[in-house]
Every structure is written in structure tokens, then in C-alpha cells.
Image (cartoon, rainbow, N blue to C red; front, side):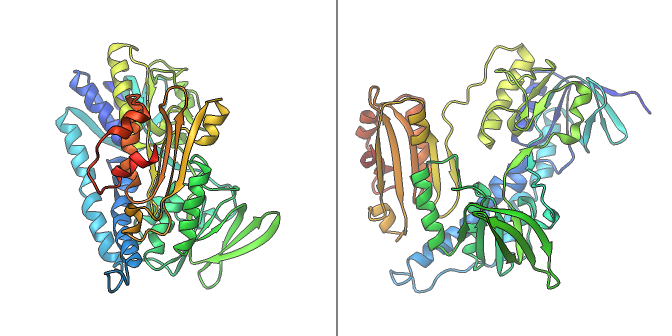
Amino acid sequence: MAAPLEVDVLVIGTGEGGTTAAQKCAKAGRRVAIVDFRPYGGTCALRGCDPKKVLIGAAETVAHSRQLVGHGIAAPATIDWPALMRFKHSFTDKVPAGREASLQKAGVATYHGTAQFIDAHTVQIGDQQLRAQQFILATGAQPRPLHIPGEEFLLDSTAFLDLPELPADMTFIGGGYIAFEFAHLVARCGVKARIVHRGARPLEQFDADVVEHLVTASREAGIEILLNTAVLGIERLPDGRLQLRAESAGQPLTLTTAQAVHAAGREPALQALALEKAGVAYGPKGIAVNEYLQSTSRPEVYAIGDAADSGLPLTPVAAKAAFVAASNLLKGNHTPVDYGVVPTTVFAHPPLAAVGLTEAEATAQGKQFKVKHEVTTEWFTARRLREPVSAYKVLIEEETDLVLGAHLLGPHAEEVINIFAVAMHTQLPARELQKLLFAYPTSASDIVYML
């Protein structure tokens, strides 16, 4: 075998984080290589955020038209799934070649295949070996194994987003972002959707009261939600349908479905790297890193995004981590990572958005705060669209008058939450935020009534 090719920095993973880090290192004059066993572009651009949002856009149109039938709309819109998938592909198909070309233009050497460490500084990629002085690991995440019989019959999110057609009914195993977003999507396509969650309540990282409003909206949209229900096994029936063996509140339960989707969480995609051969320590949440995103066990290695045990598993978080990690790698550890205020959204219908502390978290931290919580279905913003469920909860610290957390469910919540994030980042007191003049009538103009 030929001698390994030498580079200064090897980046593993071509998502937003890996690409950003590789380009920054190349711009600084380092010899940089990047590798991915999948098409270049990462989860968000190819198999997650972007294609999902394209599909959900059509579902939102259907939902709004249904809500306004008899109120100016004569008949609801319907989704042409094959045509919608072609539209989605117009966004995703061009990404891999474009991403690779942009990396090459930046001076980054590109490789395809599974990278596996064979020692502390060398990786094997097919028949090629690369030797690097430093590494940035940005491998993303993958579905977490359920360790139940028959889980091979489940679709993962990637397969779901490439379905050529939809069945009459689908079951989503899990109670997080993926389950709710996909269930709301297919429900607007005429599919009978079911969510099966082993916990007492879904979307556990969000405020419980606001989540309960979303559960109500979901059920009103025709989505069946089974809580405290664990799927124990899956088998294929002679007619092609799936049978799910489950347990609900201690009692056996059997469910059948045309297709079932794994929506029960993801884990860092690290197993294929053979990190033990490089002496890189990692756990269920990712590679153990310090405040500079440097491996605590191997100083030559940095990890970002879902590959690291630092920060929320969100694309903007990975992009910010990429800048920090690359800067620390290039200049020596000088900038500790600070993710600051991170808003997030569940793109159901209506969308659920949050930033900051939940009421339970603020209470556990001993904060003294006041709570503004109201159902807003009769507010103009929701009523003009005949939104069946709309609500908010805002936490304001009593001593400082600062917003501790905001939780929104309703039209354009995914946009309005960013204004709360800006206020929290700049430590703008609630009374000052309330004084701002917003364009009217807009969803943002409702903020003054939430404070």
C-alpha cells in the first residue's frame, strides 16, 4: 500500500459544521482534507431541516385552507405527493455537487468513503490512507437503536423523506420533533397518523403546558397519540402490514399499521470511526470535549455538532461550534464556546417554538419570576386563520425584569421566537421590549400583550 497522504487538518463530515470548519482552516493556509461516506451536504441540507421544511410548507397550505373552508375558501387544497417530492428534490439534488465544488474551490481536498482510525494520526478511507496532524470530527447523528425485535422494518427519517408515495396509515414511534412534524405532515396528506410514545408526555424538553396545547391541536387534526406506550417488537404480517407488540400502562397492546417510522431519538454517528484506536473518549452524548471543543483525551482532536457532547443538536449550534473549534485549532485555545440563547421550533401545525427556561426549569433553579400564560385562539392573529389552538407562556424575572423563557404555539411562532431570543441575548428588560412598535397587524405585534 502506498504511503499515507499527509495533511494538516482532516475534517470528517460535510454538513454545515464540517464544511464551515474545513473552509476556515483552508483559508488560514492549512492543508485540509474532508471526507464523508454519504453525499456531501450533511443531514440538514439533504435529509433533515431543509427538505422537511419544503414538505411542511405544502402541509401548512392544506391546513390553512381547511380551516378557512366556509370563510372565504370554497374547497380545501390537496397535496400531490409525487409532485411535492419532485419539488423537494429541486432543493436537495444539487447540494452534493455544489458543496464539493465549493470545498475544492476553497482549497480543500475531498474524499468519499468511511473514515476509520488505524492509529492516533492516520485514517483509512477505502484503499487510501490519510495522515493528519489535527482533526475536526463533525459526523452528525443517526437513529438510536431501539433494541427490539423487528426494528429493521422501521423507516428512518431519511427513508421517510424519500417515500415515492404515502400509505393509508402510518405510525411514528417516539414523541419528539420528528414524530410530531412528520405526523402533522402526513395527516394533511390524508394519511391516518398515529404517534406512540413511551413517556407520560411528549416533547419533554418543551414547556409542559404549551405542549399540552399542541397535543390538543394534534388530536383535533386527526392524529392519534398514545402515551405511556412502549413498542416491544415488530413483525411483518402476511398482507404486508406491520404488527406492533406494545405495552400501555402495564397492559399488552397490539397495533397494526401500513408503515412505521423510527422517531425515538438519535445518537452521535461515531461507531464507524474506531475512535478507540485513536484514544478518543466518547459516550452516549458524543465525544467528551472541553470548553474549547477539544477532545479531553486527545488534544489534536476537536469535535463539533452532534459528534460532541456539547450544545443542542441543532444546525445553527453546529455552525457556531465550527467557527469556535476551527479558531481554537488554528490559534491555540483562546475562545471558549458560548452558545448563548438558542431558540428552537417544532414545525407542527401550528408550530411550537421556545427559547430559554421552561417554568419547571426556572422553578428548579430557584428563580423568582412571574408567568404570563394564555390561550390566544381568539386573538386576531389566530382567529383570522381560524387556528383551532394557539397559546403562549412567557417567564419574566421579578428582580431584573428580564425574559427568562418564551414558549409560543401559533401562527408564525417560529419567527416571533427570534425576537424574544434577541431580547434575551441583549438583556433587554420586558418593559423596554413592550415599548417597541411592531408592524401591525403581524404576529410579532402580539408580543406587547404577552409581557
